[in-house]
Length: 432
Ligand code: DLL
Image (spheres, rainbow, N blue to C red):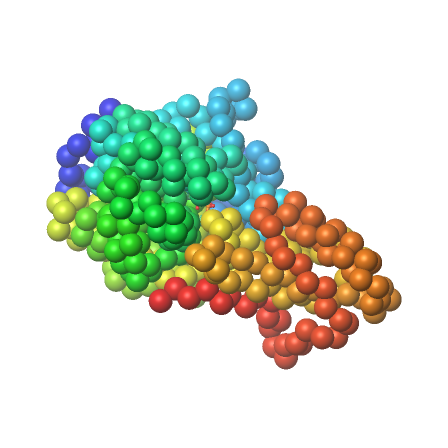
């Protein structure tokens, strides 16, 4: 049923009709199954019957990452746990993860959406695809995996972390497609070059996402590997990879808008902006059962275009991302908020709240250095003590962020104090 919908391109009117009908059903569903939404609607005297179609969407309240955090872990779920067959999680703004749950139907829709994206990228059942996004709580690995299996491709679940094995298998298996972050793919291309394997690969296409990247990076990937590289977007709260992907024409990412209704909002007024204008992207999940979300603010900045694409698809397209509204960093594909670092350091009595995160990209791999001031009371020049403290903080950070950071303990009062809003991040990565 859902699968059939992808086979033909519908007109905008047809799409709007589907979205309207699904929105009406969704509002009724969340009102009766999620206390959080029921209370939010009651607070503004809104009853499910007041939402008659898409034109009424702006009457509905927004949902934010903080709402997920405040209802941690399962408070926004619309079904009992017996209906949830999978959990994923991503970084919250402080210590707590943002948890999402999928019913069996949700997993079917997810693999359907990823299948559409892979099809857009020219991947078919005849391909051998290496999935080199992380498997685990992160949605990248298992999400891409489900879609690739759905189209019948041969899936090699590489996950991340072993580039030599990946390149060897790429050659030995004759892999024709790869799904991973763009920066990791550039790193892989270097490994292939260094090992003299670059001329032995059969790769045709790459499906890259999970972090910001540019046309320049795409050109470099395509040139070095002699392949085509496609941009795939998604976020765990809404589903994971497969919310949108670009086609051969690279004129924006086609949104799976029969499942995820996109709005681009003016960052000051939060009213929807016109096509072509930049704003914050929000999604309403039109078909999700496990954790349906209404007007979820992604914090990602983009613009939208509802005109048909040269490829023939009629789905709305969002432009390549122009940044974020908040201070979330994506380091090696992992979402990191400075507030998480702050929350982790609070528990270390030997250091002050003064810290600086220095993010860089070395050999196409992201690096994070954390400079943190030692408290005057604990100040010492004893190398062993400093080494032990460095190790302790590195461990705490690894636990809190899920990535390794190089920790550097600096002298009291040595980090620059800001006169305005404190600056905690220096991001040296170049995106252009
Ligand atoms: O990154 C899901 C994903 C996995 C997408 C694999 C694509 C491929 P989260 O960890 O929840 O989910 O992070 C979501 O990552 O709000 C964006 O800021 C950023 N992001 C994801 N894809 C892109 C992209 C996954 N293609 C956050 N371009 C989002 C730019 C992206 N930013």
